[in-house]
Amino acid sequence: MGGEPIGGSIDWPVIGQQVGLGMLLGFAVGYLAKKALKVALVVAGILFLILVGLQHYDFIAINWTRIEETYSQALNPPGGLDAVIRGWVDSLAAVIPGAGGFAVGFFWGMRKG
Image (cartoon, rainbow, N blue to C red; front, side):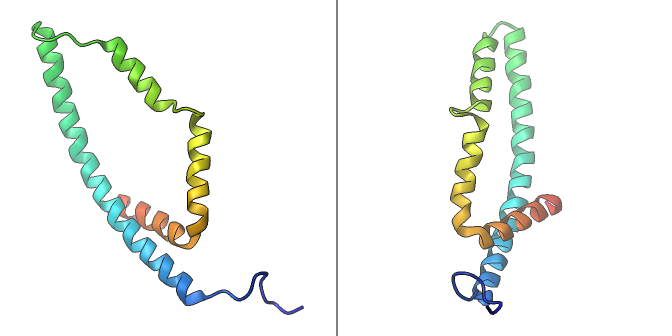
């Protein structure tokens, strides 16, 4: 019994390329996501202030109950959060080297962005 892994030999250069490409793409997505999130939060804050101001002066009526219901439904998807996470894990299982590199790159990009 040699030290060979079950299922044959591992092609390290291919895995290295997948991890490197995944990390590069993850960094780009993370960096862009952080910048876009900042812009989106500023726009959402301004929009919220405008809507509350319009409601205050009786130009519009906001159904806060419906907004809370929609928010609650968005946070509690069908099957629960556990079902969503299981779906992600199943999807990523086939591309573990690239996904691992992507995850590292994504968090690195979020920190630098």
